Image 1 (cartoon, rainbow over the protein chains, first blue to last red):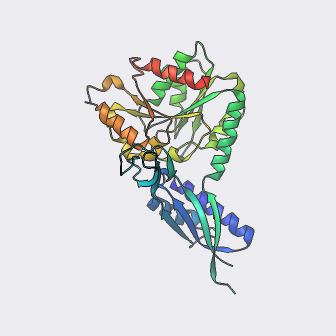
Image 2: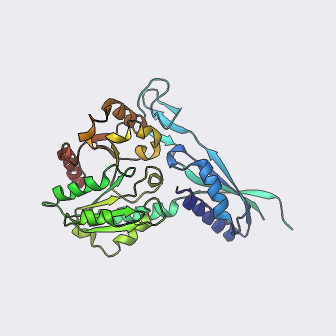
Image 3: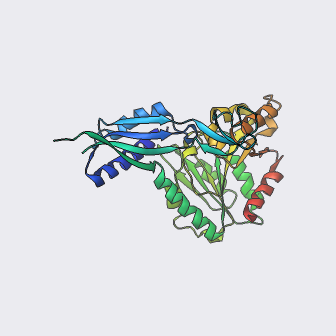
Amino acid sequence: MHELSIAASIVDLAQEEAHKRGVRVLAVHLKLGPLAGVVRDALLGSFEMAAAGTPLEHSRLVIEELPVIVFCPQCDARRSVSAQSLCCPQCGTPTPEVLQGAELQVTALEVDS
Amino acid sequence: MTGQPRILEIRQNVLKRNDVIARELRERFRAAGVCVVSLVSSPGTGKTMLLEKTLALLRPSARVAALVGDLATENDAARLARSGAPVRQIVTGTVCHLEAEMVRNSLADWNLAELDYLFVENVGNLVCPASYDLGENARVVLMSVTEGEDKPLKYPAIFHGADLAVITKLDLADAVEFDSDTALANLSAVNPGVHVLSLSAKTGAGMDRWIAMLRGWRGM
């Protein structure tokens, strides 16, 4: 269970930005891909714990879950696939080239200035 | 007075700090000419056994060392030290995975230029280590025949991120009716084109191909 340490990194990162800009964080927006190896619900619970006692206490973590997107060389097209099956859903070609799916990225802060 | 909530776009990778340290480590390994191979698997897959045999097989001709991560105890390091190779344990306490900073700290006083290979055995865990780059040249994921063929489907992130998959305890394959074709199909499904080796560290079957693979990586 490494979500608590990930959550602590998110709180630190957000607080650092907020401090720099002199604002208070109301919500942290995060993009999460299935290949990041992080469980959404565990992260949400951990965020509350990690934020407790910090200026981010009572702020929200808003997670946008991204699908895995691969490139199919046969169809010359982007395809949305499951992390359990990296092959083209149209033609069945294996698709080692992953264009999206490993994200663990804070994209925005909702702040109260 | 407080104003209206507004959105600040920032776009930062959560593990940026780990990634920066991992990049520094990778550069340091490259400059020292040491090939760094990390091993990940669930507990009991045989990482330490494989490493014990690997150190012994490589040692006559190569300078090898190992870092071993564990939640508690230094048993694995003691086992590996019998090979005569320098071994250091990283006791992670409550942390369920190795991070680049732990690797950096434990290597602080090592002269990496004196090594040909450094093995990093991660904490037995197929979930958490997936997120952390350690600066290694190659990441090897292990699954044993006793664990079932569907391990890659249950833990796609870690199997996806591996440079090589090793199926261990091959000597037990018949006893547990291990279905090799299904296991290979599952590995390909989460990591298309991944190279797979099957071996038994106990009997030595398949160890020659593993050692050849390591020598190939070193030559790169």
